[in-house]
Length: 170
Ligand code: OFO
Image (cartoon, rainbow, N blue to C red; front, side):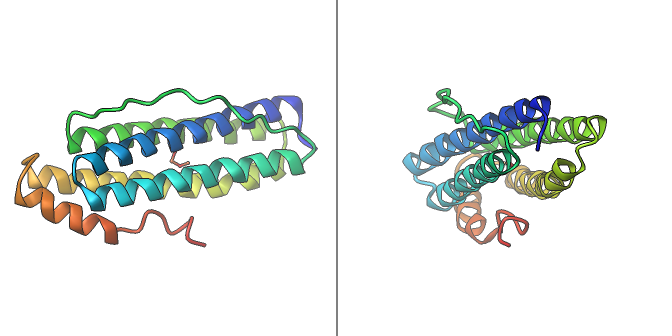
């Protein structure tokens, strides 16, 4: 059984995962409209993964005697200024999520809730992978340097083969 405090904190994380899914969906849609098929495919997949992260939390909260709250959704931006800004935003966003997960882990220790603590280790691992991937992608974009042209064409082709996340492929 989870405490009210843990329930509330986990529900806040449900909302964050939902917001991540929405944000990446908006980015995917933008990339698709801009003609970046590979990037949009990658981001649609990321958006789906975030929804999975949300579902995993919802099920955990309910199984542990709490009640998951399905959050309302805020509209993410419809336009992005460049490919680089998309992935800068993505990395920034993931860093924020990592902080939130770390804070959650900390609270489970304070509350002596070792079951939730163990459950959250999956997210700790996931964040490590997601931040590393976002950083790798950004590094590639910095190498390309140009926002248009052949480099981006290759980038769009190559990104489809980048694994979104080994931890999620389990
Ligand atoms: Fe759910 O890992 Fe990204 O946000």
